[in-house]
Length: 162
Image (cartoon, rainbow, N blue to C red):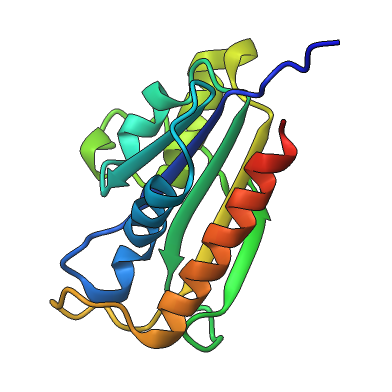
């Protein structure tokens, strides 16, 4: 009996010039090195382009997002795993909303509204607490360690899909 592979998109967000904010990009770079290219896995460096999330979700049954989060009250490097429906911000129907300034959590809500029955049900979000967004191109050690842990968790999750 042939097992159906789950189409999975892994998306990392962040600004590579803003220190620990780049953790999502770091995770994506590491996954690209460590996961062999497969037709059912799409690994995407989303940078800061959250609105693109809408278009990248189509055709995938599973989505994994990685990003930094500030002002949690927890030490830098604290790792959170949250179901997508817990973080999706309600779309604003205000015509004054400038679409280039929305965040990925708002984009998820727009995607659900637009894609309807094609919206993937399996969405996980990995967030890493940060407190350093200085104009630098390096990650702090605790945030990098948390990123490495996420790489391992995502690799295990993707392997379990086979």
